[in-house]
Image (cartoon, rainbow, N blue to C red; front, side):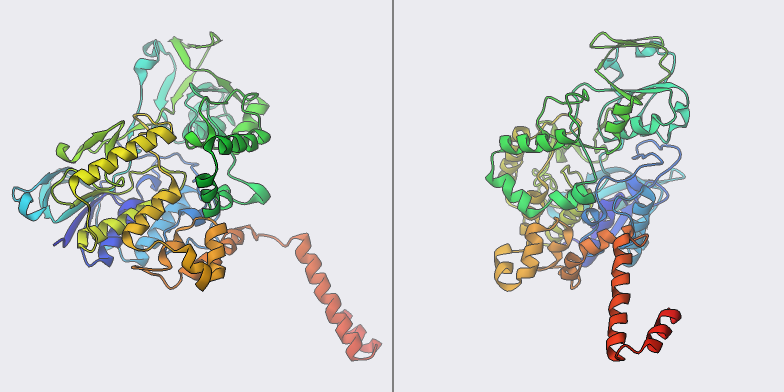
Length: 541
């Protein structure tokens, strides 16, 4: 029976894994290699090896209601798209509220996780750690949860750029980027049009002489500010939209979605149109990039063909001279170097995990990976759902199917991913957010029944069907039910509006004026047009 659980990493996945273990009566020990919690969202001025790294200005592209944990709403006055410092503050509040900090061992690196000699009988693991002063220590745990993330190892494919060794300027991976200071007055080439590449190109264009954005395949660029100023995900990431995707041909949905995106800015005209369809890959979220392209601050270029000194030649045979800086926003490799090789079942481009969590070939289900998932939605609610399932499996209240059944499921997932999405070694997996959340919720027994709610709580049914796919709905029923879930769902738009109420609008002033007029009319009527009362009321205002 699982009692003690090792958790590797104190980022958003590690925090919710600790909470899930505690709720099941298990004792977690979280090993964190840095000096603070937060994982990716802990900003540092200097990037540290084998750790995720972010830039100074980073703001998340998921709105706060869509990214928060299911039983701990983000404060109403926080902005909808939060700066990394706000996100870290939220994680700290979460950790303090659920008393998680006492279970974290900081500046402790996990070097290896190995099966104990009696693993066949006990299912236990030996975890080797190293402290900041180099002291090694061996621990025995009943189970292990890996929450180390997948933005740790920068992919810098220099061999794909002939002549890079001759480059006379400075080049680096976006992992090392902190701000645009080194771009002041310079000619900059950013390679890669993902979210980081777009952000760096936009920010660099404010100080650089000129920024060029080199892309091999192009990308669909989507605004975060949607119709009527709503956050994009709160408008379109709903169960109703998901149902449409199940009922309508994907080709039609791609045609319709691409039409809406091109209505904002024609991707062909802007030289960024990709070969893949809109819903085949997660798009780039950037409200500023199209304006920067239109104003000439950012110039789109094709893939780099060759580098000669300070000259960069592109595949369309155009040439740039006097290039000072090249930023490679070329993504990340993923790896779990501390886990045993026999736990890594390979399928396609990815590590095959049952429901993207459990290695399918192990004798005991006492090793899990939480947070290694990719969808058009925030990692926090997905990791939380994974952690709740893992904790129930460790506890023994939920069982995994036989090995061969899990392997067949993993292979089926690989085929579905390859059929529906553009995948590669660096982006090996993608899932449908709603499908995945509902699937795991069904395993735990917490998936809300829309049919039941239709007859028993129609008001809630409407909000779950038409409203945003926030995580609160997975606390409405079943194990871990939260009494505040229904209220959180009914007030989620109130929290969205709250940070925007920073001044009285004209409409508010009009409403106040109308109230005054109604009060005046009531006073005049009550006092039968007593003008002395009228005068007192007017002058006392």
